[in-house]
Each structure stands twice: as structure tokens, then as C-alpha cells.
Image (cartoon, rainbow, N blue to C red; front, side, top):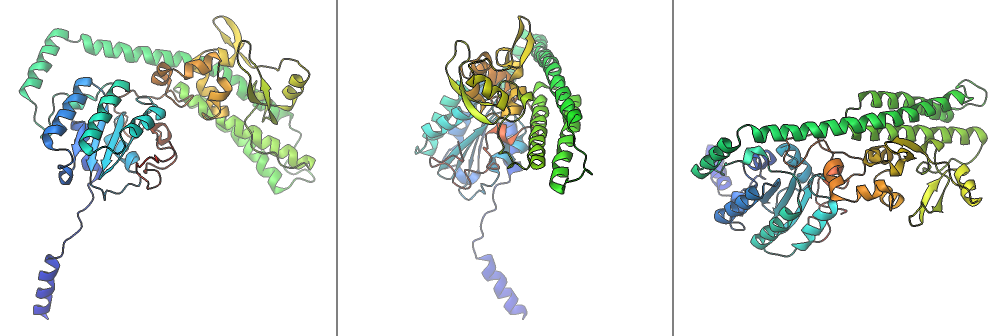
Length: 435
């Protein structure tokens, strides 16, 4: 028996074993020290000298670009999301996986369209050319600065003499001035966000009050004759939405927090519309966005053509009352808000109303609805994406290179509902997971 076990042990020792996948924690740890990580098994694709040159180029550009070259059998499920979470730095992440390539980025660093176009432009190239071309093109487009952990650190974890001399010269020349400048920049940004939040607070409080008045006018009691469980459920959801909206607004600390408030109010009004239909014996309404002219009007009933002053025609969701007004050639009842120049329609009141509108209408609807308006024009510019994020209301709490840890939205990071995978398993190859 002992002899048989010994023979089996020898035979087992001679059987090739599959290499374990590279730990995401290992890759993330290396990327926090250096912008380029090459798995030892993949050094033939990107030799150390070329990896070092690519790393130097990224550092010199002072951009938060991370590149990883991993084996083909590396699991792809949630790879980008897990890598972004483990690294914890706002930036753009590019991965060469065997002979496949793809990338994701925080919206404050690179918009989704830019990521898609950059990835498409290098498909089919060999590893060295592909990574070099992607880096060249991405660095020109990216926003943000490199993380501080990269300064003067080589892959082996030692600090180069040149880096020390350079760092010393910079410190002597600038002293505390650079630090003070960064602090002033962050303080200015925080002050701007607080000012925007206070503007939004007035408008959202009006929305919450209007919704509360709707509930007060509602002639319904859960125990009344004819009430059934479905009606009571709609009523309970409507009440919960009111309480949740007040709580979310009380907890709001940044302008993007307002989006959750208006999403909740929109949910509540839809519950009220369902309750009304059940009580009146009508078919349940389909889920539609609120009235474009004033979300307090409730869910829309149709899309109608409308032309803003000086703008192009577009179809917008309208409530029943505004649909009649438009058919009669009258102006709709438009939600106006206070500005320095007097009361204006919310779409002409500045970028702070992006989160408010985004909660009601969702990011996918806004570009078409707001085309040609002041808010729509601002949202289409790179400066809006840099300051407020690319999600039509997502201000983004961190800029490129900031350490955010796990505080990021996978949707904002560009995983497009795929959970961080590569298009549901189709990594690269022209199908980038719903780009």
C-alpha cells in the first residue's frame, strides 16, 4: 500500500498543473506603485524595457492611466470593477488579456464614447504597438492627474536617484506653494458644489412640498369600501416615497445626491397614478417619464412635438393638461427657477440643475430633450464632464488620480450594466459590452 501511494505521488508530481490566475489584489498593489503591470508569464508581449518606457511616458504626462498585461486565462467576470475597487484610484484602466484588449474609465477622466473610440482604434494590433498607440492617444484626451504614489517609484519598489534629485528641486523651488494651490483648488470646488446644492435645495423642497400636498388631497383610506391589497400597496409606496425623499434631501451633501431625491418623487407619483387607475377601473398606466415642462405635473401621457424659443423642434413627454395646451396653440406651464437674471425655465438656469433633471428623466433621455438649451449645451462640453461627471447629473466626487477606494459607481465607471465583465464574456473583438 505504501509503495502504491509513493508511485501515485511521483506520478502526480509529474502532471502539469494549471497556473493560478493572477490575484487582483497583486495587480492593484503594483498599479498603485507604477502605472504599468506585466504579469511575469506575459513578459514576451511587453518586455521589461518597453514596460518601463511606457510607464515613464505615463508618469511624464501626469495622467491617471493604468495598464495591465495579463494571461489569456485570467477570469473576466467583474475584472474591471474588481480591479478599479482594489486599486482605489479614479482613472482609466486598460487591460491586455492574452491577445484581447479592452478598457474602462471613470467618467470624470474619460467619457464612455472616448473609451470606446480609443479601444476600437487599436483593435487587431500586436501587443507592443497596441499598448503604445492606446497610451499615446489616451494621454492626449484624458483629464486628471497621476496619483501621488507613482512619484519617483520604480517597479522594484526603490526610488531612483534622478527622481530624488528632481523631487528635491521641486520642493526647494515651490515649497508649500504647490500644496496651497491644490488646497485652494479643492476648496473652490467644494464651495461651488455647496452653492449649487443650496440652489437645488430650494427647488427640491418645493417639489417635496408639492408632492406632500398631493398626498393630503388624496381621498383614499386603506380600509375604505372597495379598497384591495393592490391599492393599499400603491398607497403605501406613495407614502414611503414622500418620507424617503425628505430623508434623502436631509442627508444630501453634494449636488449629485439630489438625483436620488427626484428619482424617489417620480416613483411616488407613478404609484399615485396606478392607485387612481385602480380606483377608477381604468387600465394601469405604462411607466413613462414625468412631464418635461414641470415634473410636478406627474407622469406624462404622450410625446408631443415642441420647439423652444430659438431652438429646434423635438418630441418631449407631456402631461394631459400640457398636451391640450399645445394642441390649442398655447404655451405649456413651464417650471421656472430663480437665477441671478430672474426666473428662468430650469433648462436655462445653469449646470446645477443637471442632477435634478437626471433623477426625473434619467441620463439616457436628457440629451435629446435638452438639445439646444443652456443646460443641454453645458452637458455636452468636456468642462461639464470634468466638473460634474458625464452622467447628466452625476457630479462625481473625485477627479482623476484621487484615491476614492470603493466609492465609485460601476455605471459611472463605464461597465454599462455588465458588472465589470468584458461584454458578458466577449472581451474586445469589436463588441465592448454594450458600448
